[in-house]
Image (tube, rainbow, N blue to C red):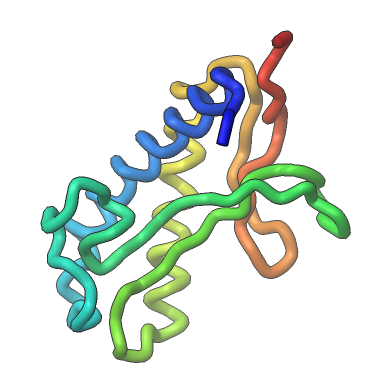
Amino acid sequence: MLRHRKLTEWEGKLKEIFDEIDDYVEDSYGRLYPLHPSRSKRGGTSNKEEDGLFNIGASYSAGFGSEHGAGYVIEVRVATLENVEESVRSRIENDIVRMLNQKLDKAFPGKKLKAEKDGPVYKIHGDISLGTV
């Protein structure tokens, strides 16, 4: 699949941010639950999305029916068979959103991006344009 260079760069920066946040979340919460038996231990693969207790990322949404419009819906997966208490999940999500908001300004200066609740999900929204192409 052919992808535009600017989109690849934009999503690459976003992946770097999520990898940094993944390290923090693994350090802070990675021992709370046993790892799913089919999941590699932290550092067991070349991609943080594929190992450890957490997979943190985002998927583009056109924003139909959304309060904030188009953006990237934040996805937080916990790779365990245990039930993750809502209070723990909420604490983890709040940490992720706080860190994400700190890092977005540095990675995308002038874009005025923000991560916040959008209905039942968290979303990165703001100027997600790629500029002139």
